[in-house]
Amino acid sequence: MKQIDPKKIAANAIELIGDRWMLVTAGEEGHFNTMTASWGGLGELWYKPVAFVFIRPQRYTYEFAEQSERMTLSFLGEEHRKALQICGSRSGRDGDKIAAAGLTPQPMESGGVAFREATLVLECRKLYAEFLHEASFVDPATVQRSYPQHDFHKMYIMEIEKAWVRE
Ligand SMILES: Cc1cc2nc3c(=O)[nH]c(=O)nc-3n(C[C@H](O)[C@H](O)[C@H](O)COP(=O)(O)O)c2cc1C
Image 1 (cartoon, helix red, strand yellow):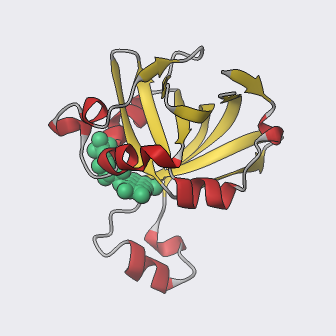
Image 2 (cartoon, rainbow, N blue to C red):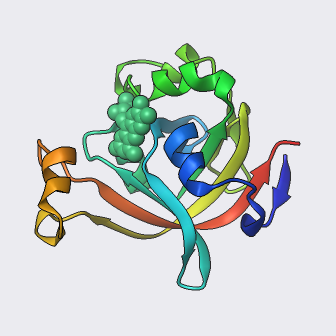
């Protein structure tokens, strides 16, 4: 893969995350987990390029996200939609969903793991992590629609340390 400046990511972040989806992966080679995510963002904060993701506490990936200093975000092409559906509907607690999805883990320089099928990989370092609080929602309809079980996401704001594209 070729390293690029995060500012040169040639995609609309809303389309990239919301429509294409991403694999959020935490842990290191031999001990990691991944899940599909379609909520999050890319931007700038605290003088750094950042990515932010939202992980519900019941996800197996959450346990790895809590223990890891870094995470990777992997973006795959449309031909891998089925793999993203598998990683977004099965839990790594219940078996090897990565093999079931036909994905190939790729260890990265940071010590994290991404996937060889990805066309864009972001290696990220956690800067800030906090649960969303019900009392802080300005719009109660958002709570009703997205948190009927009150299982509020934990938000991770991460520095994008390295961005890689497959040529
Ligand atoms: C399109 C799509 C988007 C998703 N986005 C998120 C998300 O942003 N945050 C989250 O916590 N779960 C999200 N999920 C659900 C997790 O991917 C799903 O619960 C997964 O099975 C968790 O796997 P794990 O238990 O191995 O971590 C999404 C699922 C799909 C299919």
